[in-house]
Image (tube, rainbow, N blue to C red; front, side, top):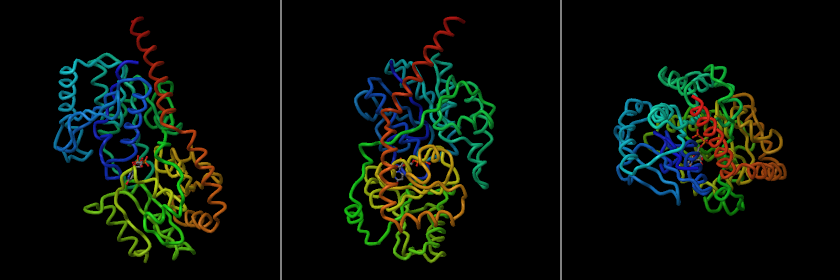
Length: 407
Ligand code: UDP
């Protein structure tokens, strides 16, 4: 295949992860770009400059690079970014012209990039694939109190109708596109996400606890962005219910230790529940350091109200750690209840506490579930994901050019 343009307007693949607007999508785009290149393709990821210190072009590996384009102030949050799309497009066109680049396919990530993809498709006359990662209407349905603009839903609808192909991570996302947005089922391909199996590997638990300076009998872990949709309040409440609670430390990895409203809210809640000395908020941790956290944990817990995929759970599994998670979205596609962890259908603390307790009290069960979790994760490499996606691209390009020739 020729050159592939990945659009990730707000999610820079080389940004620090685990902060307010940086998480799974950044990882997804980074891993895809690398794997596409390893499989012999040329990939350019276009993203917005979010840090004046960054160079314009960052090489990820031979054949893949990130191109930062100036569009709006560096520190703009994603809620305010829509207005800077024209500036981004102009910068993209001028970069493309200056290097004489031509692309065979465009793959946009998230609705903002989807909007950019529509414009590029018209200009370049090549097929446009889009992946939303989250959908406004699904998010709104998952949790009362979430706010999403009408502009977002309307733009998603346009992308759903006008993109040549949508790639989603789960059958549920496909169903949501059809039922909530009246989308065309045949234009949607389901390709589950992957995990970096070189980075995320099992490690001795005692060693990992030692490295992190943890002397507690048990460690329960959460990793991810700190936001209400993740249900961290449920996790805190379930920790307060544990009978073995006094010997158990909860590590909450992610967020920013300063000026992060939601993290402060969770800290206050931990204090109010009398858990102040048993909960550690580490702030975000570099992904290369995460395996040690997953390995130190007896149990990984993800009580999200919604997860379109839930990469952190798969990373924990790749490290051989059993997972207790909400039975939502992507999580129910790769966690097998009673085998590699537990899936909880209710968003309330009691059932989470019960399952965490069961695992903490039973080392043999923990080990067996951890081994099953690792086995499942081994099926889900990023190289496999990229291979399937390249096949989707190839099929789409055949159809696209065939219908163009027939027109
Ligand atoms: N992550 C990280 N450091 C942190 C917190 C998270 O590297 O402190 C990474 C984590 O390894 C995972 C991603 O951020 O790959 C979060 O993805 P996930 O799909 O779980 O959640 P999302 O951000 O998409 O809601």
